[in-house]
Length: 517
Image (cartoon, helix red, strand yellow):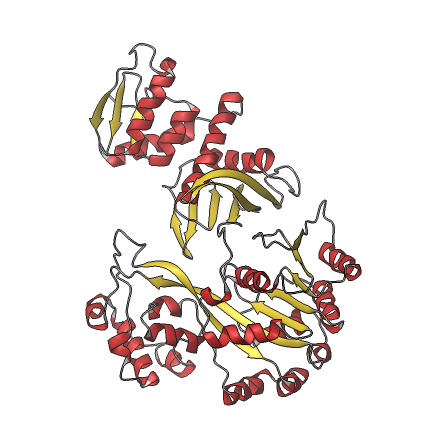
């Protein structure tokens, strides 16, 4: 008979119960499960063989019985409310195993980011795969579970951290650990950050910094031949600044690494200031880490490099006025400069520098200072094994999606589109994640000239946009349309990453306000 009082509990068993949420072991030696194929069964058997004291009267003999999933969930929920974990040696070992298990599972699934979210009565563990957030395991109905994970990550694993873990304080650090990856055992490096939240909760986010072991060449990052030619022309020029803009996780750092990797060994001195380095480029890369609330650390490192005869210099993300002004100063003194910025378009770089970083518009528009501005994003690519044709996908689309698609096709006025474009399969296949696997880059570039600088100095951004389009500027939506036509990406996935691709006009939006479903 299963009841909450006869469930065998230890920190190791609780980890299995919470991770799989489909099995529990009783003191009578009965393993109740709702899934005879679950990996939890073998794990529980192995644990009881290793620790005979868990079932002292049964000599390791266990029988397995089927039970409804709702019953298992109910008992696990009750267990989370009536038991509390204390950090003795055994508990610490259990937390260490949980943490290692989360990291190991994430690496094998090629996760780029892990999110551990702590709520009043629950811990959720999710990961980002090809830009999509997915659950790495079932929500764990216990607050203490996540709290102990947070403490272990910062107090036992993290280095270069702001401080030891306190639940009410923001914290940041770095973790280095050897893990089994799809390519073999590797030293993995993670950036770890914590932010507190309501109800005594919080969130830890881990970014796998060296996920991509090898730096791709410029020819293999998803750019068009013309994009690559423009970048190479800039990199071979005498001086000036290249800004790469995009959201978090849009491939900006990878792009810079590709350029610098190509430039090394060509007779020019190259240095980078990074927080922290994500690739080994075979050049001098300085890890810029602020310790004990140290301010302006990037500015100090940049100033120090003035004495090191640098030709090409790359700074990590520009976050403040001092960082932006330091970059401009270096660009004016005859160096090639690269840096990244968070903004939503190439045009937006001007506004961000001026209005948020307080860089004077006259400086931004200075002759030959700003030379190349790039905005890019990553979009999931279609699975070649299960992608759908236009005729195949019709049955899977909603009326709203069909309306948007037909409108887009009319606007494009290209008779070949229906024949060449492809769509994701809503169910996917065993080769992919819901019809998509991998990602490609979409990009827009502004090669600045004096006409552009005049618009910037006047802060006439709307007029500048019109002038750019007349000159032949290709916004990111055009690069998306090109890859949609080639059948590389799904139009609805692309619309999630590219503003204006399928969005309705203001007039259309207002017309829909009172329309019944």
